[in-house]
Length: 330
Image (cartoon, rainbow, N blue to C red):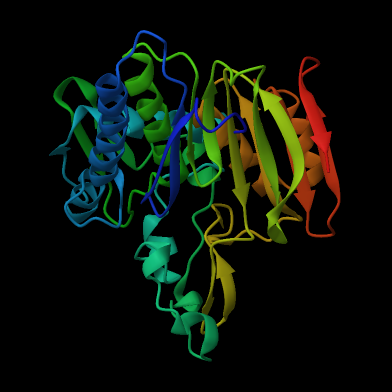
């Protein structure tokens, strides 16, 4: 997101367990007060939606749904929207993007925000989690039949079957970023970037051309493998290299494979996808990672994406771009 500092206003803060950055170029007719109000509104919107959609907040809609498993409960319209998106994602991914594995990931020790996982988990022999108790949730149980999550959108009602926990994860984060972008566009901004942990939405341009964003090196956060010039696109990255911790049965990460109920052992460690919407990019990136390099690339080529980068554990890099994309490797 490169441009002269005096023409781009930026605000950074922590939310959704990661670093969030709001960046926008004010329009010539906008007053300083109007600009401040737009940034404040976007930040408030992110905070409000996180409080509704996080499984780590005991007062959230997601926690309420999980605590009342087996019963319909009334939740916010926003929560219903994201739950419906998650069910669509399950179908698009043929069950690999699975929103009801919250109990499994909690058994692995990821039952609080990653920032709050006890640091001793990384150094001591015991670690956290109960890896040995994790059981598989086979895809085929649900793809051809009734799903364990039920929605009555007219009444804002959601129910999850007993034995399951809802986890909207990265899909919720992507949707929240999209809503923050809307706070700016609704106030007349045309040139905007909202980023949450590297997943981002770009609208318009920076001065002199498209926004420039990077694809991170999984083994060196300070290094970008590619720099992309993009406008009016979203970028999502799914990876197994960041959110890792120790359990009594070894190191695990947060990307579960629903076919096994275990952390994925795919040969892909990072998959970044460009798409028109961030929620769509989130689903495509995670699904391709779980499928593995060969099958994931074949699957992505049939999906509505605008480009992708796949990085394997052997440090091989595979990519494809829309013909109009300007991508520069380091």
